[in-house]
Length: 226
Image: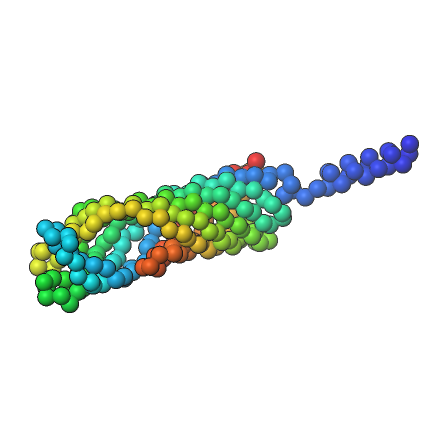
């Protein structure tokens, strides 16, 4: 009987001494930030609007205006300092300039000159990822972390009109696409209350497409553990 009591007492002591991470295993988080897509260039084909069947090869270089991105995630602490989460994100941004180039004499105005966006050329990007993060030992209340993730995106681009240096216009076609992606993230969390923390981070995104779509995100958010 005494042995049973001792075992029960030992078990209770162990439970009371269990690490704090065992309480708030689940969390939800949300963030908003700036989206900065890098310039890119790619091979393409140009055609006249009145004769789409007549196509000529060429290249195009694009630049983009900064955009806005928002994220929502649900996460779980699988072991001390290691978290996994599922995340969805929506990003909105626009194309800024385009430099179309072809050596075909039928498209003399496409000589690599810069065409500036007049209207349209808006991008809407949905992404879904699975991420894993490692939380380092807190420093003066700040908990640095590093993470990575993989996932996919569904993109929509509206058609647009761009104006060249001589006033000539260039019509940009819209469309939809899907592609895989990978991300790297570094940031820190700072507790506001026992369950609520504020976060700040930088994220690098690489999309697996021919043009090598790369973007950078700087964001702030809140994380609530329960």
